[in-house]
Length: 134
Image: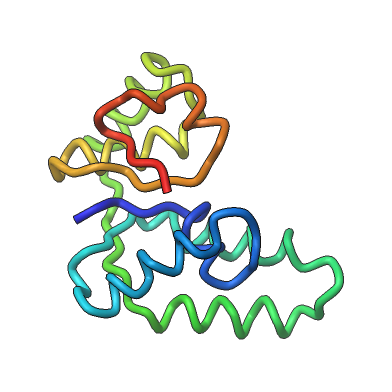
């Protein structure tokens, strides 16, 4: 099991660097629906990214693409007060954004890794055992 973030999920729908690697994870998820989990934050990040990456498409494209993502049924994890507290600690400790720390906190709580394609995070935390690069 891995905690997946929007930098991976968006690559399932938008061709950009890492698209093929992300597609492999999607295929693995189709075969094993318990493979990928994510904090509830993922839905907001995916929708925001689809809207941002959509300058030449219409709003209907973003909506349809988001609906395709939502139908995949990735198990969304509730981010409760305890996890928020741990994410805050991690944000300061690792010098990362709060939303990135939420992914790390969930991965830590589950004893698994956070799968990301976020270059900024990977430059900072690439050697951290809680992180898995796409």
